[in-house]
Image (cartoon, rainbow, N blue to C red; front, side):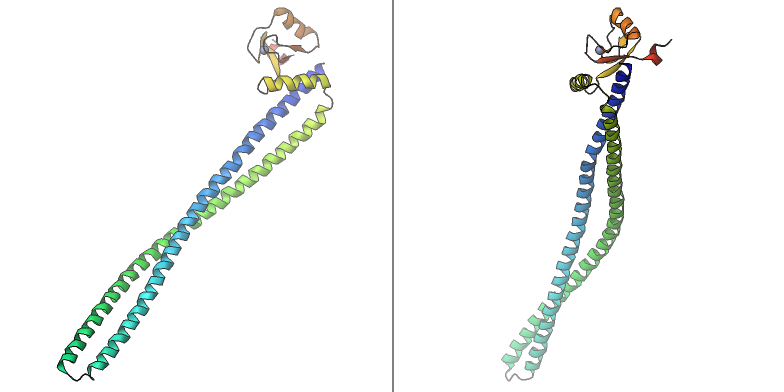
Length: 239
Ligand SMILES: [Zn+2]
C-alpha cells in the first residue's frame, strides 16, 4: 500500500503538470490570433494607402490628357483666328480662345495641386512602409515563438503521457477509480499529505485515532471531512 500511495502521488503530479501545460497551451491560439489580427489590420492600412495613391495617379494622368486636349483645342482656335473674315467673328473667336485658356489654366492648377498631394502621400506611404517592415519583423518573430512554444508544450505533454502510461498499470484498478472520482469532485487534488495532524486538503484536524493509524499502518485512509486520500508526510511530521 505504501507503494500504491507513492504511485498515486506521482500520478497526481503528472495530472497536475498536464493541466498546467494544457492551460498554457490554450492561451496560445488566442495570442496567435491577436497577433495575426493586428498584423492584418496594419497591412490593410498600407494597402488602402497604396490604393488611394493609385487613384490619385490615375486622376493625374486623366488631367494631363485633358490638358493636352485643351492645348490642342487652343492651337486650332488660334489657327482659325487667321481665317475669320468679319470683326464680329474675330471677337467671337477671341472670346472662345479666352474661355479655352481659362479652362486650361484651371486644369494646370489642378495638376499642380495633384502633384503636391501625390508627393505628400508618397512620402507618407514610404514612412509607413518602413514602419510596417519593422512590424512585420516583430510579428514574424513573435509568431515563430508561439509555434516553438506550442511544439515544446506538445513535447512536454507527450513526455508526461508516457510517464503516466508507464505508471498507471501498477495502480490497483479500485484505487484508480477512487482517485479519479475524488479528483473530479475535489478540483484535481485527490491525494493530500497529513501534516501535524491536519489534512492538507481541507485543513481539518484529523481524529487522533486516524492520525495514529496513518502513522502505523500502511492502509490507505480517507479524510473524514473532504474524502481525499491521505498520506503520512514524513518530512513534515518527522520531528
Ligand atoms: Zn480533508
